[in-house]
Image 1 (cartoon, rainbow, N blue to C red):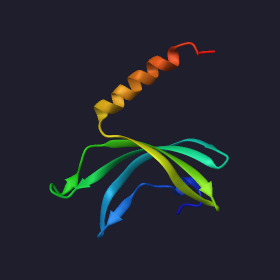
Image 2 (tube, helix red, strand yellow):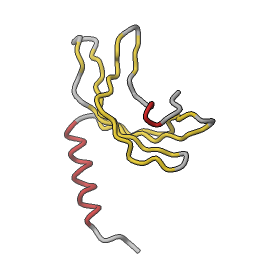
Image 3 (spheres, helix red, strand yellow):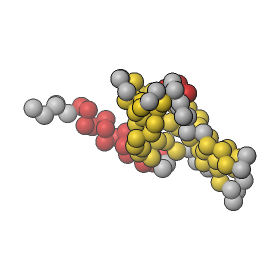
Image 4 (cartoon, rainbow, N blue to C red):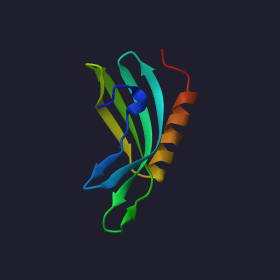
Length: 99
């Protein structure tokens, strides 16, 4: 477990192979006991013996007993889905806020 938000990673090793390789991370907010982090990563494709295409994930962490623990996640499986999310959010943030 991570005790500092900068220590949080999605790197995952199984049988000596880095099966989830974190390429980049961005802490979106770190307020109180809750943090949101976006990760860019790749999964190991055992059949091909190489890493697959980039993927993206947004994860929420909560600090509990001085450790950050994952509470939820949303995975974006490919670049096309990422573009769709960006397009929709870009439209929505330009709309006037509802009262």
